[in-house]
Image (cartoon, rainbow, N blue to C red; front, side, top):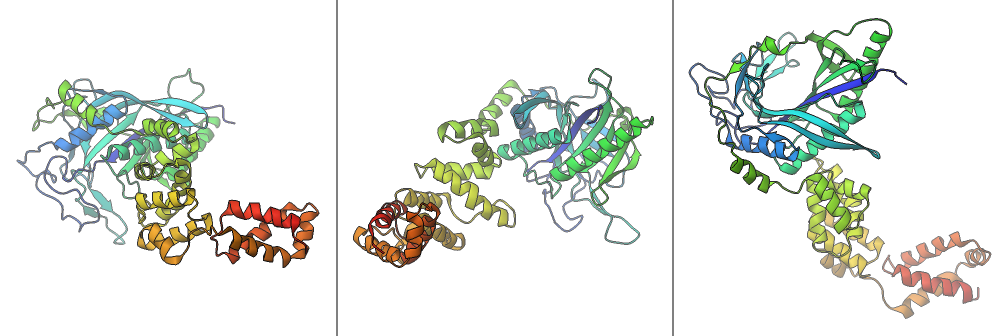
Amino acid sequence: MSHWNIVIGLEVHAQLSTHTKLFCSCPVSFGEEPNSSVCPVCLGMPGVLPVPNSKALESAVKLGLATNCNINNRAMWTRKNYFYPDLPKGYQITQQGDSPQYDHPICRDGYLDIKLGDQEKKIRIMRIHMEEDAGKLIHDQTPSDSLFDANRCGTPLLEIVSHPDIGSAAEAVAYLEKLKQILEYLDISDANMEKGNLRCDVNISLRASVHDPLGTRVEIKNMNSFSQLERAIEAEVALQELTLNSGGKIEQVTKRWDPNQGKTFVMRSKEMAHDYRYFPEPDMLPLTQVTTEYINNLNAQLPELPQARLSRFKQEYHLGEYEAGVLTAQKWIADYFDEVCKNTTNAKQACNWVMGEILRLAKESPDGASVSISPRYLAQLVEMLVQGEITGRIAKQVFALMEGTNEDPQSLVESRGWKTQKDTGALEKIIEDIVQANPVQVAQYREGKNKVLGFFVGQIMKATQGKADPGQVNQILLEKLSTVSV
């Protein structure tokens, strides 16, 4: 057990799902021909005038409201100056600054509540600000050169900066998962980490106790995976512990994470805020349209957020904490389950099918979040099962047929004659024949070996092609096992 106190803060970058870039009309796209979605504005040509994207501003305010932030009606733009190959104009338009004079983000002083097991913790959010993304350097296409793709230049980003309130790798992952969930519920970002639409920089430092000043921090850039974020933090913490325990000093540097080696590597010394020479963006005015009325209108448009939906699922559908958590983890799952429950009275059965078969199908889909079976048809299948029109075995067969066709389950059952067999006389004859044909198993049952009942039920279901009512089978079978002579 380490005696060092771990201090972590995250700077999360979320790419917004706007149709166009932050300051021009170029489309926001992924996978297009390199350098095809560009114009003089996003390339920073001399004489161009940027115009802020109104949808990006709405998205920023919505996220601020959803994360309990104060919304700034005096937000303004600044220039952050640095020279790097993926930044063609040599500066970035942002809302960040190195002093109160230049620091006017759209949102500040919010928080998110996270939960790990039974423990809850509040992670404070220092700020949320808008900024434009840089381009992309590609290093693996030629043996000696790096290539530059400017398509990403000017893409609208929100940067969400936490206070250093996070105390472990697990807490960092829980915070990022919660933030991703809210972005998806608000429908302002697809938050796809694989595409780089959600990524974060993590700042890590150690100190002897919570009462000591913060230690020297190390920043790890561009983490785009929950599992790799956890691994990188654990590796860096272990390295800092080793350094401090041996009497060494931590240097303030920026690092990258190598997942193959499981190590962090220094990229450069860490810049300080004043190194960026912030000053007010001369080509744009402050965002004076963020009035109280504007904020209230957007607040009224907020959807049901994850925590509220989880509470409703528990209360309205009588689900446990775990089930409600799984069903609200992603917005599309929660929407799907809600739609199923509009068409069936048995939420518990619907929960079982969505958590089992629907999530299995989604996991097998190319995007990990699509299924071909409509909620209405799944509800119909659940109702048929609950009403005893089909057995559980038949329900699974019907579901398998629905996977490829999304065909009406009622039609599938009727066309194949799969409705539950209700003829008691015929069922009694089948069960009696099976009992008489298996005297050894009958003797075992009468000796107290109740497990043999599973054998008989299997034989009966096979004989009836799975169409016999299980309750009826058990009732008749127990009677026959006690009375039939063998």
